[in-house]
Amino acid sequence: MQYTIVKYDMELWFDKNKTAEVIRVVDCDLAISTNIMIDGKVYHVCAKYPQNNLIGVREIQLQSTPEEIEYEEHLICPYCGGKDIDAWESSQDSDTINCGKCGSEIEYSREVEITYSTKPIKRNKPIKL
Image (cartoon, rainbow, N blue to C red; front, top):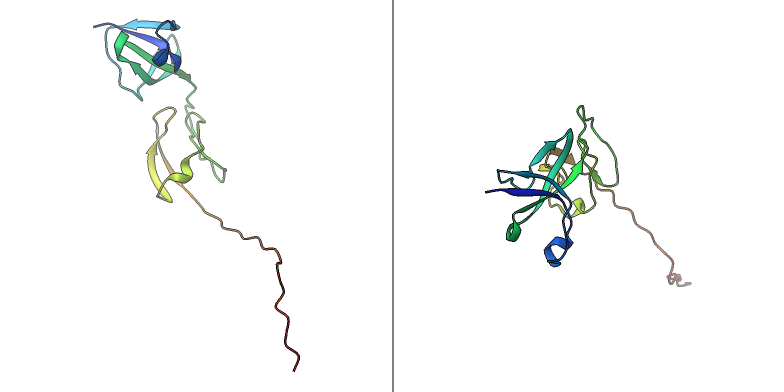
């Protein structure tokens, strides 16, 4: 069976008249989260449209020699630079996960800092004896 690799577009799910930007036709199925190289460019499989055998991909840039990233506001993948702005929802303060943008395995640790602010409302007056 042939599959058509196309530039990912969410509208393909909802608009049957939407035409996809074709990248290549292949004779194999590709799993979501697979990285593929076509004509020197790296693509990440992020969606499949089974009704018409389309495979949606996004072009990504992967670092060949990634470095640790420390003390950032969001979880950032050292391989592709993808930011996970919802990482705070994770129940673990440290774990090994797969990047949602490129599928690479990364380890993270989270440091939580709690601060408080106060404002005066009513002072408790001392009783004069």
